[in-house]
Length: 350
Ligand code: HEC
Ligand code: HEC
Image (cartoon, rainbow, N blue to C red; front, top):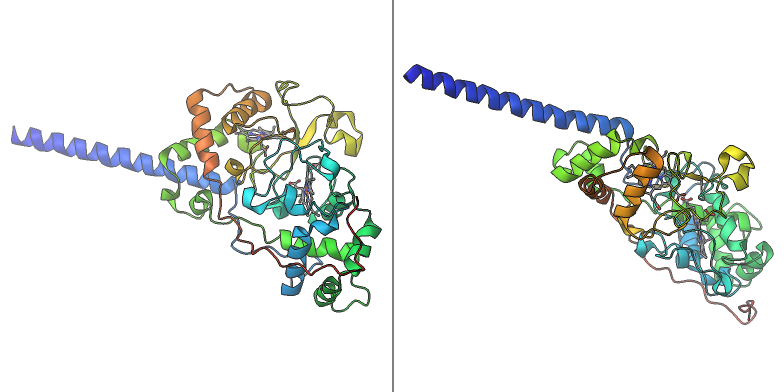
């Protein structure tokens, strides 16, 4: 009797140990699988090739980013559409630009944009420096011709000094190309390290709760990570929106053919850059059309349109819980004091 009880106890113990070991190794293998596909955001901004980040240059870039006088109306700055207090976006379906015009696409976040391999929904700019030239001159955004930008900056004495400090070796430092360099250096500081998922990738198994771990498992097993991978869980490749099933004109308006406008290749019709999912819980509305205001809907649509997977409500919920673990520490930017205009500074367009 005694020995039978001892034996039962032993069997129960052995089983418990086995079950625990299996669970631990399942957890370890989930972490190892995640570490193989994703990378944590570093604590400090990465260096930009050929564009050294000096304190003077970052300071200039910060001023330019926030300065509405770079626009024709003197009312719109980069920060109007990429508000660092709103996850780096503007919480609009599509942005409002010059003379209240609506652009055709949703403003993507600038947070961690430095880690994207190309910029814009269609990848038409290769990096942040090239990208920064676009909105200044875009007639529906800031509507400021390049010569106007330079004319404006040269007529603000504080900017002449700030460009000189940022580009000390140049005799004519106030140039559009230098403004783009300074803005890019500032944008490289807009990174969001230390999200719960980053802590998990660094080996802290308790950084994600059990639902988030199940969500991560689903995210990888269902195939989301085939496109949303790497450091930004996106930003590194292109894909049609509607690989398996067309998401419908409501979410994918037929007028915007995406990357086709850049390459003119038929197979690039409705192809878009896979967007980053970092801080995705902060940046509704979703998709290049900005037509989805609900992360649960966006995740479910991805399942059907990209993977042919009709996710259950429970699966969608867990994936969304995981996506919420991608919210990192938001950059704390001190709003810059910009140099004042003087009597000779060009006035806003009436
Ligand atoms: C009127 C709103 C508006 C203004 C002003 C604006 N942007 Fe944008 N920005 C957008 C929109 C919309 C897109 C996407 C356009 C597209 O893909 O065709 C975008 C794209 C970007 C991207 C690409 C991000 C990615 O993941 O592809 C970056 C970076 C960016 N803007 C930075 C800036 C900077 C720097 C400025 C100031 C010089 C600026 N923007 C001014 C609306 C704006
Ligand atoms: C075949 C590649 C691919 C797969 C697989 C994929 N996505 Fe996407 N995802 C994209 C592309 C491309 C977009 C941008 C679509 C657009 O707006 O044109 C996107 C957009 C998104 C967005 C909106 C992001 C934003 O900033 O607007 C979310 C959220 C998202 N995907 C989550 C998921 C989830 C969750 C899965 C798995 C169920 C998944 N994706 C699978 C390519 C993919």
